Length: 380
Image (cartoon, rainbow, N blue to C red; front, top):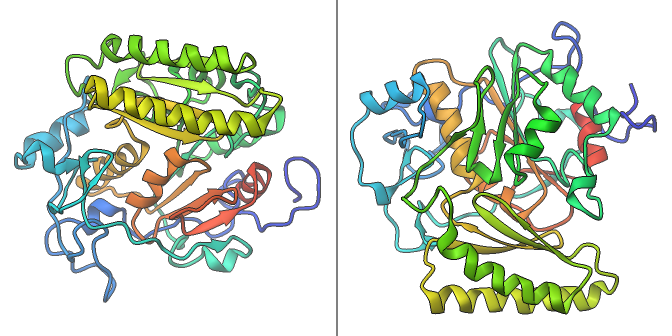
């Protein structure tokens, strides 16, 4: 079969959207990260070490989740308490001397070699082993499943993308997640009808699980997380100056972040220079006002300010651990994204997760495709 746009497919297809009996070999890992991090990890292949600690064994602890699921409640009850500063994404980390956006993390990041995804042979076996079991998908939206548009509200799913997602939704052996910087309203309006998809909004700030009545906060980090009014007022004033300087740009406000978009600015060279200045100005504002819990980042034609503890990687890792903690780990996991915000997923992904970078930017993902069309073709 060709790709969903009707052109000749340049990549092999993974077969996620085909009936289970007809699909190509399925699965990415034999066990998820949590099962390998349990005590006495004798199931590990020789020479393989835990991603975070560098040891063959590590202790797991699931951080509290607001409006917790039964699985999360059981995990919290069974596991020992750990000092909060040393916990990220549910994994107890070995204290080190450096920080990542102000959060204590594990060993220094060691970039892996990224390969162009050109053959099914490179994902079979280690990343996609045969066998029965559920397989998780963590898919970013903008720039990954869907091409960018001039304004975010224009980038709704195309009929071809809807066909792909509905076919994935029909596969009972897949556990799909859309993990996006988009707000809850957009995700629910576009993907709410997909009954088996977990929707994760604002990089992990909110989550909607299949069958749930509404959205829940994934973390209540402190008393300010519900409205963010203390820092948003200051950041809004600064971003308004950027819009005045670049009238074709605009501000997007979400529950946990604020974003300055400049994709529509005619003079992109001037806009990129302004983005550099804006980033520096926001850093100065953060330091001067002692807004220590916000992070500032640059993405595709955006400058974003958000709570720096809200990141995709720890959310992805925690979901995998909740599944594996009680003996039902995912058989395999696919993670795909295109932006800086997706790198935390690639960095926290064990070596046998199938991590895919969409685009040409520097990455810690294991594989790369050129654009969303190639990723969609591969998923088919």
